[in-house]
Length: 97
Image (cartoon, rainbow, N blue to C red; front, side, top):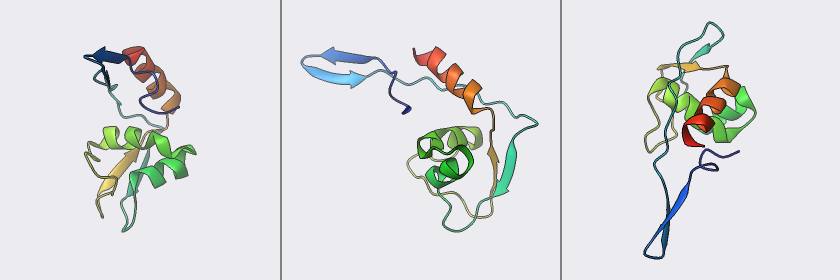
């Protein structure tokens, strides 16, 4: 499932566009994993490593307030890797369904 799969498509003057995506709040959890960003780390690669799906990169980005326009992870920065992805995806779908 991609992040934009459930977003409503509007038509206006023959043009199609998707409505604004609403993102869930990702609260810290005792189950979260913490890592330090290394040279060459990317959000999509970390998502694949921890979730088995590179398309979940946005979860890590949102939890850490990074990734706006770039998938590169800041070197030396501590990152939180949320582990409750099922809950996050469910909340995302509820907000955008």
